[in-house]
Image (cartoon, rainbow, N blue to C red):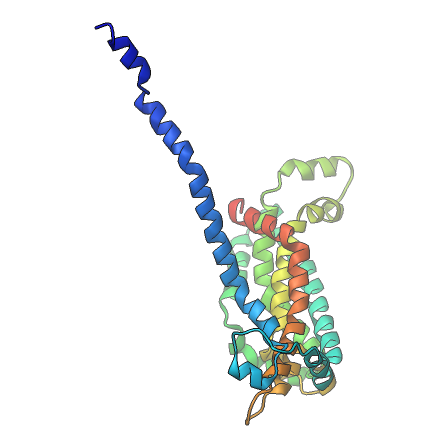
Length: 297
């Protein structure tokens, strides 16, 4: 009997044991999570790393050792690719088309999203449904009717032949992302601005638009990727070599008899640099916009 209290003092309650065992497993779980995330990141980045490494190889080395490191780092591949494909002209055309299309998409999309998210009117559900239908239309199924329409309008071989369809097909996505984000803003912001004497134009420019920067950045990056990498529309609507965009200039390295992979990979490496820079600049805003649109919308 005298030893019973001592034995009870030496025992640990089962609830406390389970709590301490759970705490002991936390570092292990965190370590496994980090390892899995690192492996996933490496698997995701490997194609991009492979592209940059392979762009320094010759054609013979590319076929003999496609996954190995280059024996000689051929920097001249980038110079030759830049000159052969006239990438300075293609870069300028792609940049002009992409910037104009983005500005038009962001302006029209923000104005439409402001009206659809902050006002209530009779035909609002039908208009939202109309934009939803725009997201369901396969883009490439419209190439033939668009070509006929642009030929009748005499805008083939112009920037307008790319800017107009790019803006039209990107607007549904832009409006849905922006309207979902703007819906989360409290009505008190507009009421305070109205009391201060601001009209709806002032509310949009000084209140709603600055607060919507994360969603605007998301739409800008999504649109930039689509406009910058598109191949089908320039192939059909542009035949003037001076107006060819970057994806069209890359096709010069391939013909019916073979492909110059050293120059093709070097040109591809140069073409993806702007998209990487764009994402690195706006990555924080993109995450905020995507999360806010998904959770609050």
